[in-house]
Length: 88
Image (cartoon, rainbow, N blue to C red; front, side, top):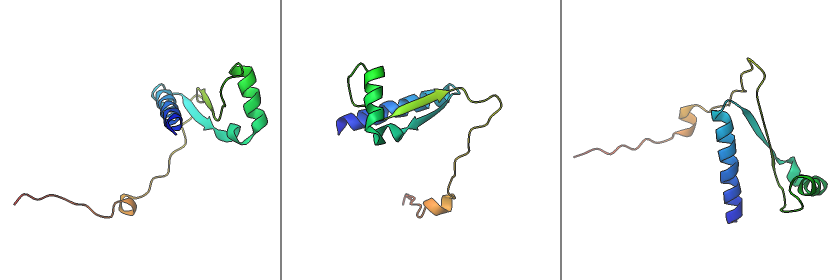
């Protein structure tokens, strides 16, 4: 389980650095669903070691292309209560 957390942290770091550098990045999780693909990646790229589960595509976006916007909920949909401490 610890290795999953470490892998998640590493993926997060890669995606954040890519964004900071103005690169587009996305995780390709299809690798996990196909044993043949995992085997090929392990043999061709990892020298037979490990058990690859995810690939990350990183590149330059098309000139002038804006990244897709992300959907955001209204604050009132997510914030139900506001607790404030009052000094008496």
